[in-house]
Amino acid sequence: MKTSQFLDPKVLARIDSLDLLARTVVDGFINGLHHSPYFGLSVDFAEHRPYMPGDDIRRVDWRVFGRTDRFYVKEYEADTNANFLVLLDISRSMDYSSNGLSKLDYGRYLAACLSYFSRQQRDRVGIVIFDQDIVDYVPASAKHLDIVLHKIDTLDSRRSGKFEEPLLKVAEILRRRSILVLISDLYEDPARVVKALSRLRHRGNDIIVFHVLDPAEIEFPFAEAAHFEDLESGERIPVVPETLREQYRSLMGEHLDTLSQRLVANGIDYCRFVTSKPLDYALFEYLSRRERMSRVR
Image 1 (cartoon, rainbow, N blue to C red):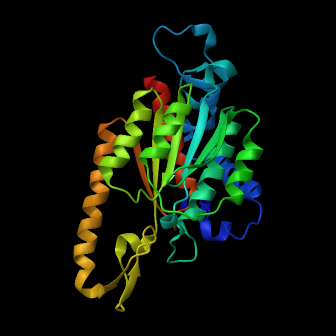
Image 2 (tube, helix red, strand yellow; image 1 turned 120 degrees about the vertical axis):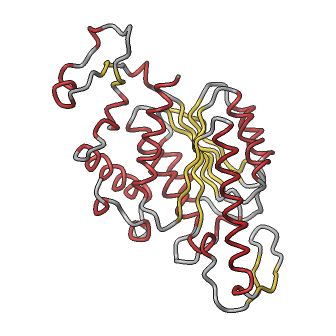
C-alpha cells in the first residue's frame, strides 16, 4: 500500500463528526487495499476464507479465484459474525500530547475506525470505556454502532487508571467468545497488564493490544530543565533532561520489550503506535491479525 494513501491523524482531527472521520478512514483504506499488493488480505475475508483440505468444493467461489488465482470458500453471515469489543483506556495519562494530538484523541479515532470497520464486516460491535473502573459499557450488538460512536465522541478523561479491577469485571460480563481490542498507553507494570488480560484470554477471547504512545515518550527530546508531572498521580519531579535522556530511553525500551514479549507469550497480539502514525496502519494490523485468528480457530 502506498504511503500517500494513508491519512494523517492531525488532519483528521479537523473533521468534526466522528462518524464521518471513521467513514473517511475506512473507505479510503478499503479502496487502497483493493488496489494494493495485499489484496489477499482483503475485506473479502468477511465472506470468504482460504480453502482448506476437506472443505466442500461446491463452496469455492470461482469468481474470486478468477481475480486472485487463489481458492476461497464462501462463508455465510452466520459463519462469520463475531462479537467485537473495544476496551478503551481513558485514564489521565492518555491526555498527554507533545504535538497537538493527545493519546486519548488518537485512541478515540482508532476506536471509532475499528468499530465502523468491524460493523462493515457484519460483526456485532460494542465498547468498554474504563480508567480505574468501568466508566461505560455498550454490549456488542449489530445495532449498537451509533451508540458506540456517541460514547466515544463524548467521553472525558478525569481519573487515574488501573487494569486489574475493570478488566476482571469485563471477564465476568462477557458471556460469549469475543474479539477484544485494547487501546491504551499501558501506563502500568507489565506483569499486571498481562495478568489482567490473561483472564480474558483464558476464557477463549481473541485479544489485540494497540499500545498508543506519544513520540516524546519514546524519544524524550526535551532540552530545558523543568518539573515533570506524573499525569496519573500528579507528582511533580525536577528533571534535567540532558542527564537522564539515555537512561530514560534505555528504561523505556526495556519496558516496551517486556510488554511485547510477555503479551505474545500469552497468546495476545501486540501492536505499537505513536500518535503521528496514520490510522490506516492500525486497520491493516487489525485485519492481518484477524485473518490469522480465523485460520487458527
